[in-house]
Length: 120
Picture: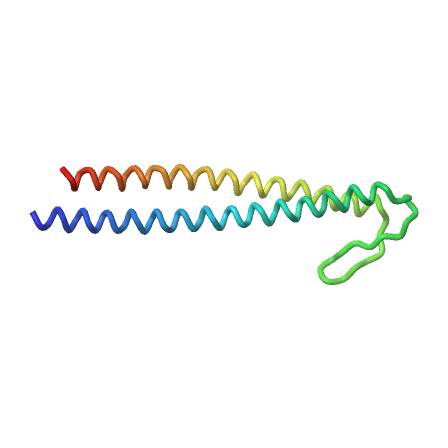
């Protein structure tokens, strides 16, 4: 009877580790999503504010750590592309998060089954 208990304990420990790992990955994904949403909002606000400026206003576009003179339509186009890229990345992270949450629930159910099996 000691062998099944040892096997159950080992399986239970593995499932607990999987739960912890999945939970941490979900939290990390949430952090990444929030960061992307914040960056996307910043770009949207900048784009909106540039719409209020006259087209002849000199503007600068960030390229790495440098700024280069540009025109408003080009900067707005770049900002629009960035917003679309951020939205796609957010969708990808949310899809991954959904998969992780399903995995978390199934692992949780497996832990419950192990506990019930051990009680019986």
